[in-house]
Image (spheres, rainbow, N blue to C red):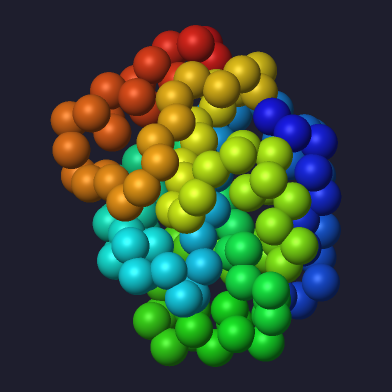
Length: 138
């Protein structure tokens, strides 16, 4: 997992590289990305269904950061979508992918699975990838 520091809309920081020890799903998205916006409710449900098994980190690539992300998420009343920000798009550059992109890490910080583009988080493929990441962590 990259040792990238991200901030939320309140200015709290987290270093992604320090999150080892549990399964992490990173999703890069933006408010202006139609497939990203369509995918967010599916990610919200996935995170609810697998609460305690995986931590979902949705990281906005919006250049205006908290100014647009905070109101956007508040309007939709998500409870599992955390308002993490990467306005300089360092992670998008790191992964060399367009939006949306999701990367699943096992507890040792090893990338287990990656999907570019919108994805059906209610699918058997999503559940299988999570099972693989959890098994690698145990």
